[in-house]
Amino acid sequence: MALTRATERTIALPMYDEAAPDNLKSGLTPTVVVSQDGGAFAAATNAAAEIGTTGVYALTLTAGEMDADLVTVKVTASGACDQVLALVTDPAAPDLSNLDAAVSSRLATADYTEPPSAEATADEVRAELAPELARLDADVSDAVAAPALALTAYDPPTRAEATADKEAVLAAVAALPDGADVESVLEAVAAVKAKTDQIGAAAVTVTSPVASSGSVRLHAGDDYDAAHGRALEFAVADATHALGLDTATVTFKATQATWEATGSTETDGGYLVTFEPTRAQTASLTLLRQSYELEATLVDGDVVTLATGTLAVERDIPAV
Image: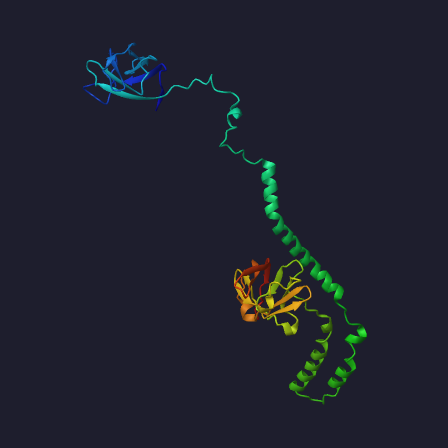
């Protein structure tokens, strides 16, 4: 253990019997010499005094004797084994009386840049997160609004519409001859099913997978054919048509997919870019949420990012 330099210290010196080195020896009058930093040994200022009759002797080293990095203590006594102790010291505590109490006064130097305040750091974090938070809010709004819009658009059939063919179905069943076989009965049941399957079918509305916020929601394993009104369509604002997207190569790049546009049509306000991913392409989407970007390579070789957003994927439910 390191001791404080230039500070009086009392140490314990166990003295062992020369004839039986495992046993402490009592009643000795030890001779103690001290060396500082490897210098010559000199007699210790104080004598070593036994603690009771334990064979352990206490020695007080003065501050002057302790004023060295290495203090070596050698103890000898007739009939006892010689003892040598090496004491390593730490520098004495510095004098702080001249230390400038106003430490902050030393900070204003040419090379010092004051760190930003907590408020400035919080503002910077909020600014960085604002676009993503706004996009997340838009995604949530779209998800909440979609069911409400679907319910508003749904026009359930009236009782008269739902039972319009009831008489014809019942007549078909009644017309079965006595003892009709199972196949005939199944055909009649199939006719009933065909009629009931039509209830509410006209109320289904298919909308574009691209929300107004720019987020895209797809179902893994689905086809998105323009002929069925399911294509991914992006309206790119470019009133002067400076980009020339109708002759450019436009790609939809996500974490797990890169698709090339199947069409880029001029509009009054710019272009309508269309993508028609197949079921094989959407089936490879396993991440439920990933970022995407719409990128164009123009005819002159320039690459332009047209849009960025979030792609949300609904897992396909396999047949059982």
